[in-house]
Image (tube, rainbow, N blue to C red):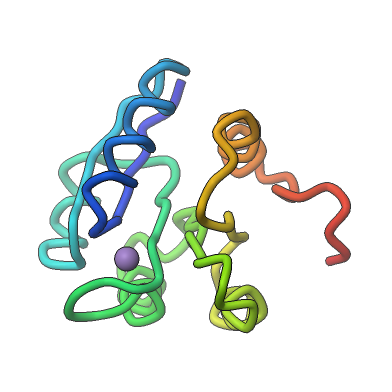
Length: 129
Ligand code: MN
């Protein structure tokens, strides 16, 4: 059980993430854009942030930079990268995300991916790091 902040602008994705995470007993805070991000972190005190890259307004890279520059700089932040954008994975690592999960998510794999993110172990075990 953990407190997880999900930043995601697609309502269907958010609904799915919330359902899967809640089913595992996690407490989900939902944010549809970066507006009020730091305030939301301070209010909800997440242990993990799942951050969409493509968002209205500031993108996930800008928002990660805001978190890293804040008093919450050591927060675990995992990018939600679009499957089609293969370059996003390397960009996500280079930008300082702790790891990434590819969208569309695999419903069966997602809870385990989040569990590994919370544990600080690599999300994709076969992934060279
Ligand atoms: Mn998006």
